[in-house]
Length: 404
Image 1 (cartoon, rainbow, N blue to C red):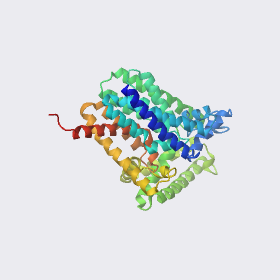
Image 2: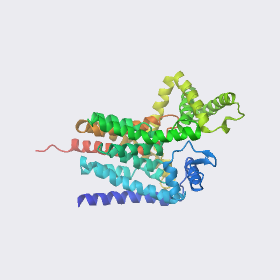
Image 3: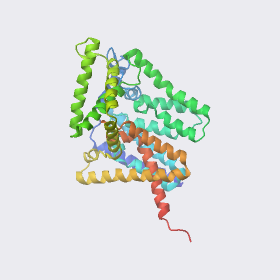
Image 4: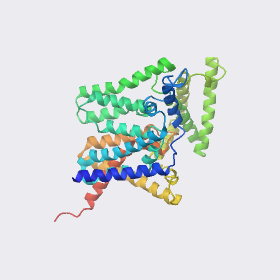
């Protein structure tokens, strides 16, 4: 009865928070990236296959989210409603997972997630964040007894967002430290690689580059290499980044045009340009390793502490300065509680502590470049909430009076 009441409270809080935002957002469902997912979804519905436009295969976006959009006829509102419902279900799932740590920790973890402004805001956009967060949580909580299913889900995760390309290594390392049989780990790894390798081979055949997505090459050039040069400029980072991106693209396109004997590199498929982007980016990064480390540290701090408070201010009548201070404080407090929680868990549940820390660190570091922004924290908000609740539980126990 108590657990049912807890779940009812959590579901109610999550539903109210998500659907109030949905109501007051007034149909603001789109982000610049949204149309890069809607495009291939519309191509699927019109019978052109997974394509950027008729006759040109899509090699930047992976298929899972466009398939979901196609399932709803590319109508934004039903997809956004589904994403808010996913958030509600995730809040309940977090409670059920964390309840083994105690009722207080479970309720705190679920409510911290349910009230997270960033999670609610990006559920209101036609973006992969919410679906990816839900799939990641399933992979995160799944026990090793079903290695084939577990591995295939890790592969689906990559085909939702390629940023998960080597997350299976984090899971495999935790399994190894938890003394899971080597055969089980090997099956999990093989299953995790199956779908991404198959998709990379499809991209090789269709687009000329053996990669899960050419977005990796684009990011390497435009956000890592250009970010390194922008850090070296020591000026306004965003302005310097835009300037360096233009310069690097121009130089790389000049090289492509000379070697491929074409008038405009932009006319070539992205799969043909991707190897040139990777090579140019690596040259810059290898030449400036210290600047690359500085860029990564800057990106990590942005991913951890950026609150995107303006997203909440848009749908609120409260003074924007008050919202900024409140949301910034919420983000910082939750993160430091999460650090304390991992330290507390390390003493009595090391596999869980390692999986929490490894998952959060992987997704925050892998996107810590010039592209860093608050939304890259969204996929690991459930893990941060669980760790923060464990930290709150440790503080509560420490503050409790000693028994007589």
